[in-house]
Image 1 (cartoon, rainbow over the protein chains, first blue to last red):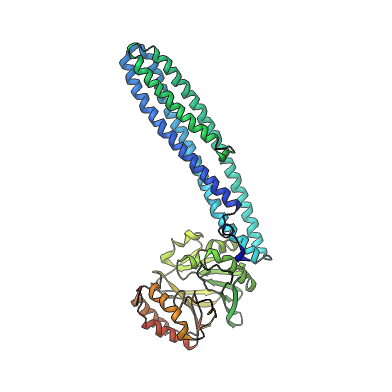
Image 2 (image 1 turned 30 degrees about the vertical axis):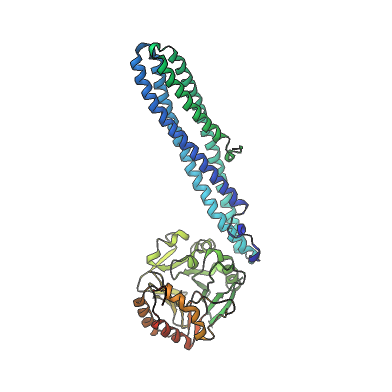
Length: 214
Length: 246
């Protein structure tokens, strides 16, 4: 009887839609983390620009530091491009998962219709067709999920390179003669922000959306 | 599940009211749906909201093959009128939805494609259901800015959307109005508040007075028949509308 339906059954907030709702929530969290990384990448770009000016003032003693600062600017640009591709995947995922949420409400209504009208062959045909469409959509989401995971792994490898650049800048700063102090401070800041990005990417890789625990 | 009641039948030409669902939760307003059948085809009038689709579909299926539905007529754009559109289209994606041109780009938010919609002009128009002539009658601002009723000249029935609607108590659930003076009390507040224009109301009363109407079928409440039809039109003509309080 309709009167005995739970609220979640009536509104299509059963297992299928709550799974999609959780996925959507996780995707939103991933997107927030990506925005954080983009903000830090922008910060690295500004810091690297200042570091290049500082290296120029330090002259020959900071030539290596200058080269590394320039590489950090390139790293910042690559990182932002990597985040743009992640954002595109997120956009596609949000679209697919949102459709599932919308369809799950309709599925709940069709399931209620089947209870009231169990003999209808038309209803059975419509449900079978919807099941096929759901399977296709589930495959698309799986493929997008894999692509997103691979893109996050690629970004993590890029950040490892950023970490190496920041560490090398620290070493180069020690040869900065009279500028060793300020150069050391700047390279320490590089190290800190790269660590911040690494932490964000670790959070992304541990997301429950990829089967992790975060 | 809703019940069906045949309110007119003449050979292949039939009107069925789909009414009253005892299992409907109280937080949803009760609605009436009407099915016109002619020569094996059907036109569903104000099919209702998505939430009541299971009840309407199962009641309709008991009476008629849903795949033979040629179209849906939406008197206006409200969710209790037409938010089930996407669900009906699953059964027949070629089905047409007749509605005021004003809502042609609004109702697709409920579902459908550009091919689904047949935009009706403000002055109304003829609609044919397997050769049965039907007439869309203007009822703009009663209550929606783009509002149409549907008149069946052969059956002498006017489907009047929200005009004539009454919010009936649990103990007054008859399909037809039995005692006009006690029934109309349940319609008064609704009409004062929902109907926005005295001028539009005057024009509608004048317009429908020229039609031969045996039954006036609203989307909520009970059906007016016989002399109660003219009683209702006269009562509505006198009513001051567009106010929260009289």
